[in-house]
Amino acid sequence: MVQLLFFYFALVVIGLGLRIVTAKNPVHCVLLMLVLFFHMAGLYLLLNAEFLAAVQIIVYAGAILVLYLFVLFLVDLREEVKMSPFIKKGKWLGIVGAIALFLTFLRGVMNFSLGPHGQYTIEKIQQMTHTKAMGEAIYTTYILPFEVAGIILLVAVIGGLAMAKREK
Amino acid sequence: MVHLSWYLTVSALLFCIGVFGFLTRRNIIMMLLSIELMLNSVNLNLAAMSHYMEDLRGQVLVFFIIAVAAAEAAIGLGIVVTLFRNHRSVYTEDITTLKG
Picture 1: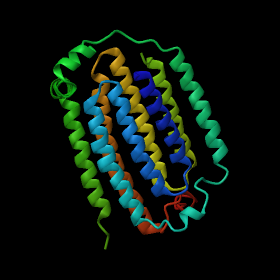
Picture 2 (picture 1 turned 90 degrees about the vertical axis):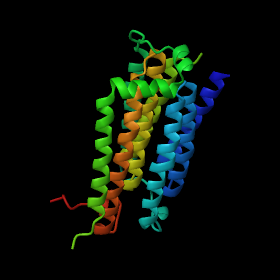
Picture 3 (picture 1 turned 45 degrees about the vertical axis):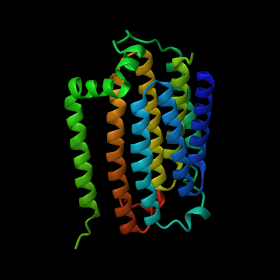
Picture 4 (picture 1 turned 90 degrees about the horizontal axis):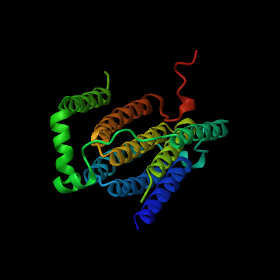
């Protein structure tokens, strides 16, 4: 059952990914990306990461993709659908590069072996619930990176404001 | 039982699709979307590693990557809007200001 679900999610994610990078209409790309994010959340659920699945849907599907859609509406798209979505003479270079990179990765995956196991076993996480386990890790061991992430978001807000301001 | 290498293969495949999109699309917004695809594949990789190593470090890192991806999307799309205001185009071949 788990294997079946994994293959469903994996096939949909890969198929949608291929469709997204080749589709002509950018609005279709963004909407397909929405479906892809939901299937990605399904993969996280298979990995017992409920909190990450929720964050994936809330942040990626709820915030980032809406931002992409808004920007697409601000930009002129009428001529986009008539033209090729790829740069000139770049398509085959891209295909060869991506396949070469994938073969390199595959070699790494084949020779991969796991390191020593940590203390958070599946039973322990299920017993204390995933959100609580994540919260404990983030607010104790990783409190400094958490603060830095807050500063990064502040920088993004200020940067966005500074760029949106029209110069006189 | 789903083996770890299956997750790693899916994630590698998705990353390569993202690389292909980033290298070949004309539209800068679609290039940013390809970056988002690559970030997602890295997230999947980290979450799978974390699950199979029974350690939460990978999932904490995924959490931070999502935060950084949100900031990156906000800044990147702000740049795209500014670019469109100045050049009336979001295509890579039209933005040649740095070309001598």
